[in-house]
Structures are given as C-alpha cells and as structure tokens.
Length: 210
Image (tube, rainbow, N blue to C red):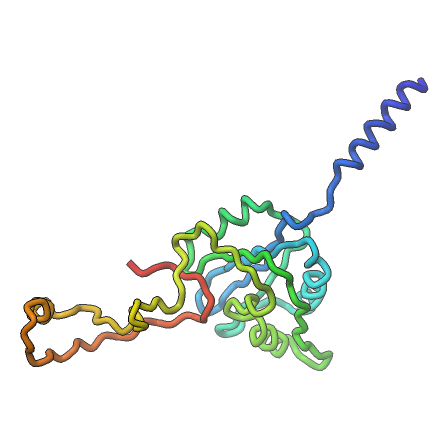
C-alpha cells in the first residue's frame, strides 16, 4: 500500500514539474475587425513578460461593447488561448485579406485608452480607434517578425535613384521607349492620366498588386 502511495506521489510530482506557464515562445492574438474593409486582422503578440500590459489592455477592451460604428474598427484580445511560434509564423503568410496578419516579438508598452466614466459606448469606440485603429498596435510594440515573408510589401518601393515606383507611368508609350533607346531627342509625349493608387496606412503589410 505504501509502495502504491509512493508511486502516486512521484507521478503527481512529475506532472506538476512538466506544467509550464505560457512563456516567450507563446503568443496571444489581438484581433482588429475593420468596419471599412470588412476584414479581421490578427496581431500575434508575444505573451511572456507582456502579461501585465496585455491584461491591462484586456480590462479596457472588456468595458466597450464592440459593435460596428461607421468605418471604425472593433477589437478582441484572447488571453485564454495560446499559439506556438510555428503557428504564428505560418499565419502571417496567410493570403485571405487585403491586409496580412502580423507578428510582434517586442516588449508591449502599457496602453491607456483614456476612457472616462462619462463616455458613452460610441465615444469609447472613437477613443479606441484613435489609439489602435488601422494597425496602430505597431506604435506600442516593436520587433515585428517579417522573416521569410516574401509577400511583404513596404508602403513605398524606391528605386536606386531615390524615385518611387508610384511615379512610373502605368502604360508607357512603346514608341517613346524605342526613341529613347536610339539616343535621338524627340518631343515628349503627354503622359496618360491614371488614377493614383489607393494608399494604405504606413506600416501595414498588404498584398502586392499583380
């Protein structure tokens, strides 16, 4: 009988020893749902030493009734389910939205949404979006992981001479190109007028245009 109790005690000890709290290799998800884009974007945030900052943000988000108001975003922070490094890295390669999911490995700053007791729900949503809307979580945490993301597209892709690809003609005149190659000087052809590309908020990872 004593031997059986000893075995049970050893098993319990081994079980407790193997139980680990979520650490630096675990991530939680802050989800932003855009009323304008009608999409949800996942921000994978390293848990570890960000626990206190995450719980503080979670308390504030819980006080807001998340409903779509005009083009504003809603936010949800899941602190009950954790995701591995592998899962987080795989998710930022997912191509289902106009904006890619993102992963951050840095230290999260304390985020104070500035909510007041007198604020109604609409006002709370406005304050929330002023601080975190359109991917602004990047202002409070650094070290974004883009390793292996060949689909990463910066806001401005410059050329060697410092010019932006946005300045290039969408449909260059083939005749003008031939004349330029021959070295002859010709009168410049008028440029085609095309709509300028829709600009996204700086820092967002968006799909390349084909």
